[in-house]
Image 1: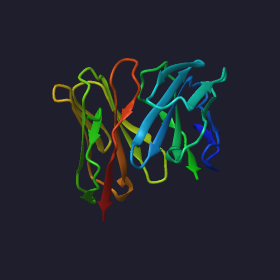
Image 2: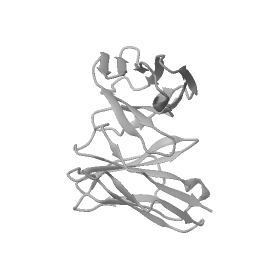
Image 3: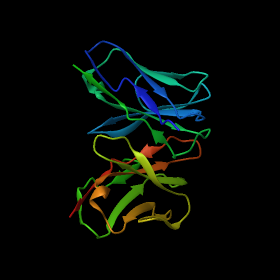
Image 4: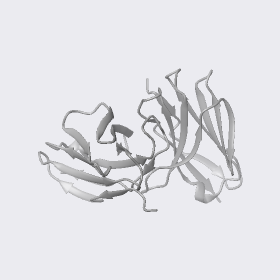
Length: 114
Length: 111
């Protein structure tokens, strides 16, 4: 069974640009969560989607947004990039509706903002 | 106060010894607790989940939960160099809440 696939794996952007990251969950998994990981803050929850609906949202500014498609694939977008947005963005999928901590993580998209 | 707290380490453990990792959480109504392992440059992977007070064993790993003390721990018996990683404690504060991670404890197993 294929794991969680994230694209692109690495990207470099400049301040003010926007970026879109993609996540394909494990087949059959309907819940997708996004996390930001930085050395200083650790893993910070961004949002969770289930059946195309955002179920939970973390404490990030509105520049961070996401969506989920009918095939459970998800995208997240960061607009007006700031230097502090440099991080590893992790997507995780789960077969359950929500409120589960048993997540399967992708390898992440490493974003560098210059 | 952070919702999930762990000692950052590094925790240095001789090969073959027991590694003991601790985690405390602030939300008394938390019901679900997890340990993830993250190797350097890799993504986190789930190694243990525990929902009831007491011990839960899985191979060389034992998770311990004490809800009254708001404390969860992970023991790694017969530690191996391959256990060298960062161990993340994670908690769900309520039934439909988001998974909250601690900062992680780095474990270094020395031969």
